[in-house]
Image (cartoon, rainbow, N blue to C red; front, side):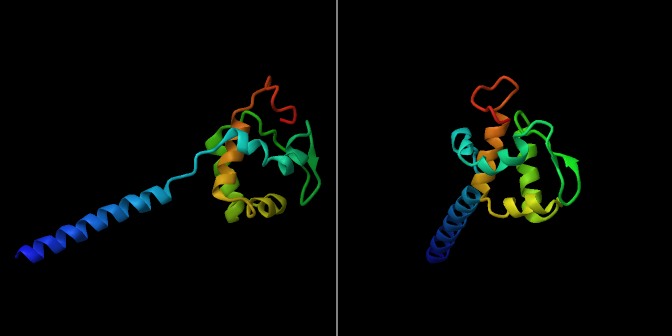
Length: 122
């Protein structure tokens, strides 16, 4: 009986520890505004031009990202990456981004507002 109980205690302890490790790995990355600033160079080409309209694959106004909600930006980038949102250029860019890149970029743009001096290319 002692061996059985001891063995089960070890199994339960390992299971609990494994659960904590899995939870820590599954946690969403925390965005870093400073890191995001160095990752938005490609974004500025379209999203940093006031009143910019794209011509491919269809003509539409490109939204400005500065001041947008962080969770929304992360969700949109993940959807482009996964293919749930359809715009070829955004998909091509999003598939190159890690989860940490997405969190950093979203944090950077969410930290901006109309008077942000640190982001002249909103």
